[in-house]
Length: 73
Image (cartoon, rainbow, N blue to C red; front, side, top):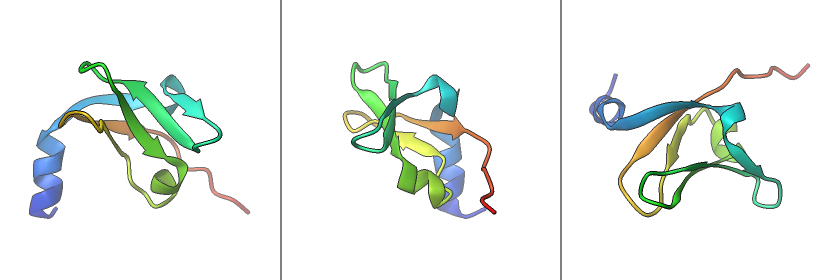
């Protein structure tokens, strides 16, 4: 694990299942309420690239998004 992964791991506010998040089809982005009043966000493209961290644009909190990868034939 790299130093950046280690420090990111320590800062994760919560772990949230993908199906608990709201999805905006137009923006292709999942959202989840942040305690600061804004929303955590992660795009489909980020998830497809293996990123599982949703960030809040208004504060420093991040959450880990829990999901199962679906393999396409």
